[in-house]
Image (cartoon, rainbow, N blue to C red; front, side):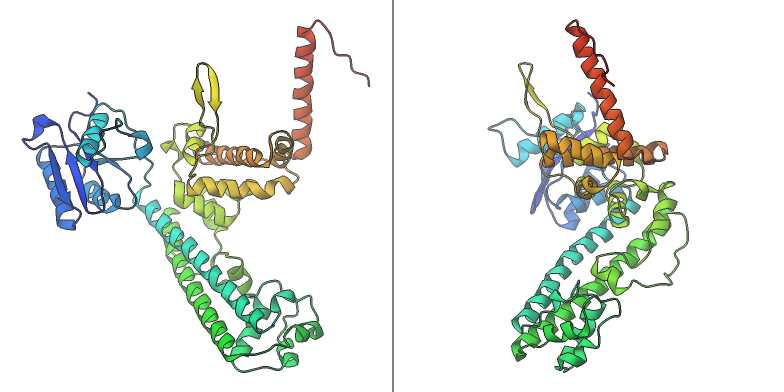
Length: 432
């Protein structure tokens, strides 16, 4: 037995069922409410019978309060993926689930899910909240465009973004009562490509009170979410400075409207990223500041939590889940429900096919053979491996370029042809 003093907890929204070895207590299975006092009672009971480690399923978010209380009391908690701890069919009850978890854990048959340290967990909370707010804000941006179109103000045809500098000046003037299209066109930024005459023609609209009200509400909500996004970024920047070992410095330069509309940060994260990682993670193809910050907040900086790069990409959901029976591979699809970090690597791989890099050449070659979807996953996996090696081993990345990759690929192809020819009793002779 690997963990003789272990417990298993079945997590629910209203109550939790806790199972311990029968020899440790007369009542080895107890049911507790999900109120805070009952969660503290669980911790006190487990400590009273000298339980050292606990296994619980990561059910929704219901596990979070109990997990934090148990960890705070010094009990080692194994947060288990429900996929890895399925009970025997026909025995699905809360009591049997807790006993099954305890039995598996006592024999060391469950693996703890990755849980970041408190500082990274705090960073993760801030930037996940930021991502949620960015999505909410984008819906109000759509409402702004809808209200403008209902008044036939075709602003989106003459400016790149209706939340950019020119568009916001025009919208604010409209909400202040200005209706003259020529005067509105003079608010055009000097970098705007369209002329004042074209903008004036686009702003000759049919103003209605209800549509103006809709526009006003959408603008106010957009600005409110923008302010909350800045607060999340400010809180996240404080944590990033703590991780970098420096004191927090108030940013001297605030974000421009261009940065805000492109969902950029209100601070420059590049120097912080280099200080945290020790290397320029932004040198990896496809990785921008926002993606790297997301990866740090989701995975942390300690890559030793994963024994190898293969373990890391498997956790990300970027490696094939082979199903083999009778010596035949039945399926090799990737796992559904990839992590946020895995999705970030996937998104980073999307534009790489249009670049003159080795990974771009790899993705184009693979797309022609197996399709774009599988090529994207394979490219994302390669980026993840490079990211892992840079953080784990301190390896620097040097871009070889597409031509070097194509040359190496051609040489491998020639060597393969030579082996096949030799096996058939032939010899390849160059024609050039």
